[in-house]
Image: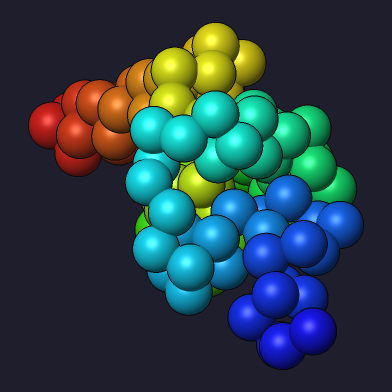
Length: 110
C-alpha cells in the first residue's frame, strides 16, 4: 500500500477527503466524497473549530483564532456547505461585531 492509498483510506474524514480529492483526483461529485464531506461536519476537527467560533467575542480577525480564521479553516477542511448551525453562528459573530462597531462609532460622536 502506498502513502497516497493510506491517506485516501484514513479514518479521519478530513484527511481522507483531501487525499482523495487532491492526490487521487477524485471528483467532488462522487458519492464517496459527498459522504466524506458530510462526515467532516461531525469530525473532531470541525467540532473543535466550531467551539472556538462560539467562544470568540470581540475581535473577529484575531490572528489564527478569531471567527474569520475559524470560518476559513472550516472551508479549508471541506466542511459541508450550507450547514445551518455554522451559518447561524457566523451570522451572530458578524452581527455582534457590527453592533460593537456601531456602538463604538456612536460613542466617538458624543
